[in-house]
Every structure is written in structure tokens, then in C-alpha cells.
Length: 226
Image (cartoon, rainbow, N blue to C red; front, side, top):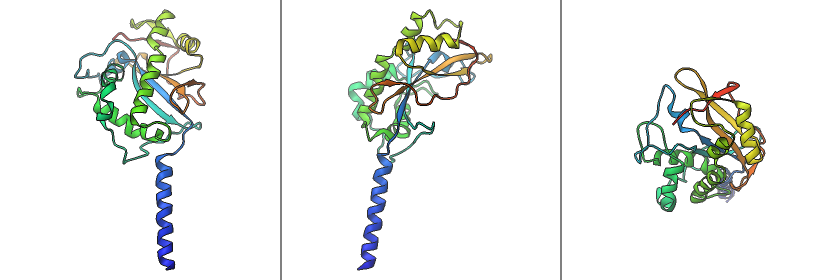
């Protein structure tokens, strides 16, 4: 009898831990948008989606759960696989606002699957799969980075702009400081690549970042054409 109770208790503990792992808490999201001109203007180049060249606008890279100490959870629920049938009503919006530029050319499913399984599954305590993708699309609609920068006379014209002016324009428009990530083009120029904004755990409100990603940008960065 004692052996049976021991086995039962162990099973319950394993079940409890699995639930905790799947629905683990996090502190905030990084909402990350990338500039396609910078993605494509590197030595590795890029491939346009099968739907054609995306519009010249910032595209969503991801909505990533994070902890205040700078670490992050990943791949939290191997049983929660990407299901494109759940996204049929927002598919056209995903193709427009969350395009894949990796090679070979694709329909985006591989990219979205990666983002859901690595990051989205770690937010299931707050958002299910459709809610996760809808939240990112709503944030993109709320924060029009290209319009914000153009209003500050910062244009994607291959020109160089001070990093401070880019941060200042976004902070003024959004109300919170962004994180800026740069990459380098084939000539070694530092260029505006990704913008990080912090979002509360509901996935709806922009907040002050508890911690910003470490940036590797020159004081003046190129805003590449696309």
C-alpha cells in the first residue's frame, strides 16, 4: 500500500511541475520590429516571401516574454504546436505585417511557427495562440515606427542619422524609451536594424523597459533604403 501511495504522490508531483513549466510566469514582453532594408543589406542578403516584396515598412520580428534580470524563457510547451488553421482570419495581416525575409523564400509559416514555439508558448498563462499573434498585430498598429521617424525627418534614404535623434523621436511619440539594435551592411556601416519596446504581460500596453538589450550601434547609423 505504501508503495502505491509513493508512486501516486510522485506522479502528482510530476504532473504539477509540468503544469508550472507550461504556464510559467514572466515579467514583460519585448515587442520587436525590424527594418527590412537593414535585414536585406548584409552579406547574407534576404529572400522575399512568396507573396512578393513586402512594403517598405517595419515588420514584426516577435513578441518575446522576458524576465527583469534580462534572461528569458523559451520553448515552454512542446505539446503546443503551431496551428496555422487558427490564424486563417488574420493570415493576410500576418503576411503584410509579419513577413519572413529568410532564405529560401517561404509563405511565412516556418517563421511564425518558430516564434510561437520558442516564445509564444511561454506566454500561454496570458495568451493562447490566436491571442498571441493578434496582440502583436495590434501593437504594430498602435506603434507606427516609420511614421514616427518620418515625422522627425528621419527617412529610409541611405542617409546617416544620430542614434540619439532616433531614440528621442520614438520616446517622444511612444512615451517610453526604446531599445535599438544595429547590424552592419556589406561595407561595414552601422545601420538601424531592430527596435525593441516593452509591453505588459497582457500584451497590450507599452511600458517602461525594466531592462534594455545591449546595443551595438555607432553614434550615427544608416537608415537603409528598401
